[in-house]
Length: 272
Image 1 (cartoon, rainbow, N blue to C red):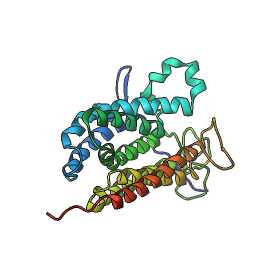
Image 2 (cartoon, one colour; image 1 turned 30 degrees about the vertical axis):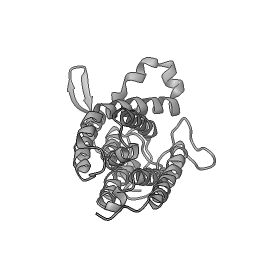
Image 3 (cartoon, one colour; image 1 turned 90 degrees about the horizontal axis):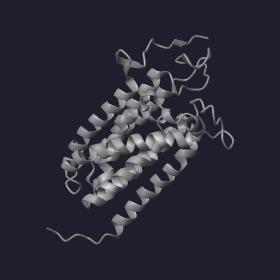
């Protein structure tokens, strides 16, 4: 059976003696910077939403929430035994080991605290954040591919790849599947929806669409991704990633329906 050869990619982008800067870290940095600039662009087109300056102020909050939430989520959900036995390695985030679900929860908590302190409408604020999040997601999945981690299950497809850490078996490049769906596909979808005044006028709707679509995309790709070794399959053929996506999908559906009902209950506005 033919298989593609994993390209000779070095996880280390730049090194200065013992100091290493990895592509994984650069992906996060690029995601924050590009996401921040895109936030400013979108905020100018959400006239009833928070001012662009608020997203300037929130950048540091977003970084802290993502890193702390993502790291704690990975430690508690995926590798608690290992990290409790090696506590100093909890701080080595540049080696990888971040949970999207934990990072998302960390950003949500940071956004809620920020909105409370600035007296902002929480869902108007998170709608813009939801639209830019696919940038970081897509770049992060590309970094996973460069690291040769989170590879897929065994396949006979002609685009299968033999990964350095996946044995001699041909596997799905599931990181690229996720990079495409969670990155450009979700980014374009939310961009197109954000241009509709009817969607922008329903705070929380775009946030709900993001949760729903991400959950569905991730749930589907998990059928091609190798389950985490420490968990294997849960509840039949369910993986940990799929299990964590279920509440996201449910809340995404609820949020979109709630915003629609809330809009219908709103009294009609007088003509100008």
